[in-house]
Length: 418
Image (cartoon, rainbow, N blue to C red):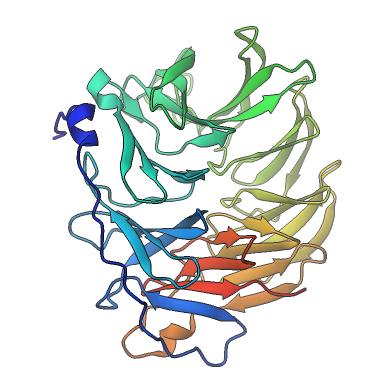
């Protein structure tokens, strides 16, 4: 049962300020292609803990420790140069059981965290809570993912509790003030149940800001004529200047749209359903092309290299597609298993796989594998379950390093030369 707490009282709670310590010396890995700059235990007792990395904020990686702690998930920030602990935060309105992709982001010197109905803004330097919003205090419910555009956070809230949701609102807040402004309300048509994901933002040729809204709604399986039907996905373009829909793609696909952010480029919208990549003209709402990739589930979203769209399919490898026509530029069958998210920097695609536990670095120019490395710590008796598969990747372009974790250690790894 949820506790009702006022935002004023909650904001007075202080974060944990742990003593900054020099990280212990850890034996360097052997037989690994990874150039590890530093690695330090996530917890002082080197116990196993599902950990994902975000950031960096102010040059320091942000780690969220998920699930294994009885008291719930918590955030810790570590020094980007040494790995030493800078601060820790766990004073949530309700205990968190973890954070995944698109549930946490960095805006300038702030760490934004969204846990379904509750959103937090933490100061990246000190870990102090700047503000928190709990939409259940206004008899609402929230979706776990959010999107960022400029200085604003966009997400969607519901009046009912998913999955039986027929009223939804797209809301926005500046990252500094912590107040949701409603941009558009939507009511489900006929027997549709809404399943909104955070909007993408497109500025059209006239300079209008347009919300591109994905709806993974489902027909009510109980009632005809949709009894037994699969999910139907919709895409809407809502113009914030005219306060009208520019176009709607209703019953766009008899398939779920993936929650990872689509890509907008040259007035085109690139989005994945479970089995296909689609290119949509944002000025007209017409589908330019659709491409099925070996019957592969496209959980990981996209990254862009030149005029190429790079997509990864579960258990089917990774592709580069021409963004003009969907033609395959290259294909690498090696990456296997569930890939939650792709990360791109300077011609290299980075990701971790929960299928084989490896950290991958793929050359975006030709698709060749630079790394496909497991954690070297898995060979140690005290850390037999070390895997990169439950982490993400955080890229620091200034230091030319990536941050990752293997459930036991936080790591800083030198970017490859290619």
